[in-house]
Length: 102
Image (cartoon, rainbow, N blue to C red):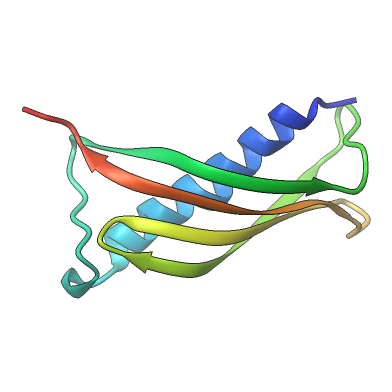
Protein backbone atom coordinates (compact mmCIF):
# COMPACT_ATOMS: atom_id res chain seq x y z
CA UNK A 1 0.00 0.00 0.00
CA UNK A 2 1.30 3.48 -0.88
CA UNK A 3 1.52 5.82 2.14
CA UNK A 4 -0.74 8.88 2.15
CA UNK A 5 2.25 11.22 2.31
CA UNK A 6 3.50 9.82 -1.03
CA UNK A 7 0.05 10.19 -2.60
CA UNK A 8 -0.10 13.78 -1.33
CA UNK A 9 3.37 14.50 -2.76
CA UNK A 10 2.39 13.07 -6.15
CA UNK A 11 -0.74 15.21 -6.20
CA UNK A 12 1.21 18.31 -5.18
CA UNK A 13 3.97 17.79 -7.75
CA UNK A 14 1.63 17.09 -10.65
CA UNK A 15 -1.45 19.05 -9.68
CA UNK A 16 0.17 22.17 -8.27
CA UNK A 17 3.78 22.46 -9.45
CA UNK A 18 3.33 21.27 -13.03
CA UNK A 19 0.11 23.27 -13.44
CA UNK A 20 1.84 26.35 -11.99
CA UNK A 21 4.77 26.05 -14.38
CA UNK A 22 2.39 25.55 -17.31
CA UNK A 23 0.35 28.63 -16.33
CA UNK A 24 3.49 30.73 -15.93
CA UNK A 25 4.98 29.67 -19.25
CA UNK A 26 1.75 30.02 -21.24
CA UNK A 27 0.11 32.79 -19.17
CA UNK A 28 -0.05 36.50 -19.68
CA UNK A 29 1.96 39.20 -17.92
CA UNK A 30 -1.13 40.66 -16.20
CA UNK A 31 -1.21 37.59 -13.96
CA UNK A 32 1.99 38.94 -12.40
CA UNK A 33 4.02 35.74 -12.68
CA UNK A 34 7.40 35.65 -14.37
CA UNK A 35 9.16 32.33 -14.94
CA UNK A 36 12.94 32.22 -15.20
CA UNK A 37 15.80 29.84 -14.36
CA UNK A 38 15.82 31.04 -10.73
CA UNK A 39 12.13 30.29 -10.11
CA UNK A 40 11.05 27.52 -7.74
CA UNK A 41 7.65 26.45 -6.40
CA UNK A 42 6.68 26.31 -2.72
CA UNK A 43 3.70 24.39 -1.37
CA UNK A 44 1.93 26.58 1.18
CA UNK A 45 -1.12 24.53 2.16
CA UNK A 46 -2.96 21.32 1.43
CA UNK A 47 -6.19 19.65 2.45
CA UNK A 48 -6.50 16.05 1.19
CA UNK A 49 -9.16 13.37 1.63
CA UNK A 50 -8.38 9.70 0.89
CA UNK A 51 -10.95 7.21 -0.41
CA UNK A 52 -9.10 4.14 -1.73
CA UNK A 53 -5.71 2.43 -1.42
CA UNK A 54 -3.03 2.58 -4.11
CA UNK A 55 -1.25 -0.74 -4.43
CA UNK A 56 2.26 -1.35 -5.85
CA UNK A 57 2.39 -1.29 -9.68
CA UNK A 58 -1.08 0.31 -9.85
CA UNK A 59 -1.33 3.23 -12.27
CA UNK A 60 -3.04 6.44 -11.22
CA UNK A 61 -4.24 9.54 -13.05
CA UNK A 62 -3.92 13.01 -11.51
CA UNK A 63 -6.02 15.93 -12.72
CA UNK A 64 -5.97 19.52 -11.55
CA UNK A 65 -8.31 22.49 -12.01
CA UNK A 66 -7.19 26.05 -11.36
CA UNK A 67 -9.26 27.92 -8.79
CA UNK A 68 -7.03 30.99 -8.45
CA UNK A 69 -3.81 32.19 -10.08
CA UNK A 70 -2.51 35.71 -9.56
CA UNK A 71 0.88 37.25 -8.75
CA UNK A 72 2.54 33.84 -8.57
CA UNK A 73 -0.05 32.46 -6.11
CA UNK A 74 -1.93 29.35 -7.21
CA UNK A 75 -4.81 27.45 -5.65
CA UNK A 76 -6.18 24.36 -7.37
CA UNK A 77 -8.47 21.36 -6.85
CA UNK A 78 -6.59 18.10 -7.46
CA UNK A 79 -8.01 14.60 -7.89
CA UNK A 80 -6.34 11.21 -8.21
CA UNK A 81 -8.16 8.27 -9.84
CA UNK A 82 -7.09 4.64 -10.25
CA UNK A 83 -7.15 2.69 -13.53
CA UNK A 84 -10.79 1.72 -12.93
CA UNK A 85 -11.71 5.42 -12.75
CA UNK A 86 -12.42 5.28 -9.01
CA UNK A 87 -11.58 8.32 -6.91
CA UNK A 88 -8.50 7.59 -4.78
CA UNK A 89 -7.94 11.02 -3.24
CA UNK A 90 -8.89 14.67 -3.72
CA UNK A 91 -7.78 17.89 -2.19
CA UNK A 92 -7.18 21.61 -2.40
CA UNK A 93 -3.55 22.65 -2.85
CA UNK A 94 -2.07 26.15 -2.63
CA UNK A 95 1.40 27.38 -3.45
CA UNK A 96 3.55 30.23 -4.65
CA UNK A 97 6.34 30.63 -7.17
CA UNK A 98 9.39 32.36 -5.71
CA UNK A 99 12.45 33.69 -7.47
CA UNK A 100 15.86 32.89 -5.99
CA UNK A 101 17.80 35.83 -4.57
CA UNK A 102 20.78 36.55 -6.81
